[in-house]
Image (cartoon, rainbow, N blue to C red; front, top):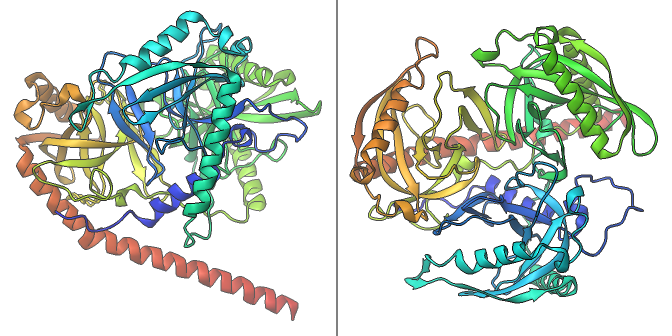
Length: 627
């Protein structure tokens, strides 16, 4: 069926914004956007956009057309990345891609799990590894985290442990051995190592190449007037009940601290902690603490850790007041709220601070004191505990501060991934004989939470934790530009050996579907595998999927709603082969263009008219005031 529509304008706008907010200068990588000017960076500090976490075999790349992470391939060999891998933005190499960077962390007294894909970190360059592959020269900058205390001794290649250098070289010389491109074997060869001076020269050349191309191509489309990043601080709150919207910044158990910069919409690495986050750490949308210029932060009690960058409805159960001497030797304070997921039956008995085990509260106190000390604050102490009612009043107060301090509350350029084109490369036609489609991942394999994409915010929201002791047997998500019988996008389960990143795009090969019925009616679950997962290369139809896996999927969908409300259920009807599944998807694709897309355009036009009317009313009011 032919591609009917180009990329939705909201997606193009988001990708354009991401292109414009990035920079190869360390000011972009810094977790603070207000660092004093006298605190200058050395020429060896650069930002890195992380695409692959250390230890992962999943190779992600930032897709230029959408600004989203997309699974490029699963490494074909039994190898994993020896460090966090990404690129220096606003650079350009001979292969047409930005300059690659590998973040190393040889050893540490702290637990270091690696940086999450999609985050940004300032790194200190120590050298480079000169390479070439089937596409040409492909240098890799070697660096350490600039803000990681355990890496301060690594200042040059000579201070990198010799075995680690051997490990890095062995990985890059062998990770493509089993891969092919255009029927020909892919290859990579390490030509040698370069010192810091050689690395900085390579960086300078790539920066100049980027600026030259930018001037030639005029990268900013003129039709976008507001090139502002979508700011989740403005996500709307419901002030009628104790059900507040919280943005999750770091999942429970993480040791890397990130800061969400409202001007970039990226999460920027701050530092590593000695104590893991005791809860899912985030902040309340539409709140503002004036004395420290940040939203109200919250530790969320959950049954299962949440993914970062999701939005979750929580109930406030208390708060802690933290006082300290800041970096400017000024006495100040902030509040740390304690909350729990709103719709989780496992936390219904928790409704105020006094109902929590005292040992847990003491652990929170030690964590909050430690995290402030790591920043460099002094005399840190928790001076007050607030029960639920006091904490809710605190939330209302800081919501009012937000209302007064932020006149423009609009969320600009949030990408509506429901409108993402159907084809595998975002432009091509979909061939029924070669059924490859782009899927959006919402729930990673192994997760116990059900997430859903909110098109108005361009983010995932926690719909509910799974009520049973079950987990997703594959990566659950949706197929863009489709409409199922319930009016939502068609669901898809992507089978894989390793969990896929939430909110990532994945080009998949359809193998069939599982026809189910639930409380809303027919409910088709499309089954697919990543296109570039060679271990599943022979799975082209339902009959090729191992019998135990199909039985496991049937068992999961028959039982995962068992403990939910009496009216909710899911029942497997039958398996559907690939050909019939593609026929169903083509009908769902047609429904999207007949019903959803016209409404999207009408709603967009109405919203634009409302904005124009509001602006006109403001001008009339101003004119009348002058008269």
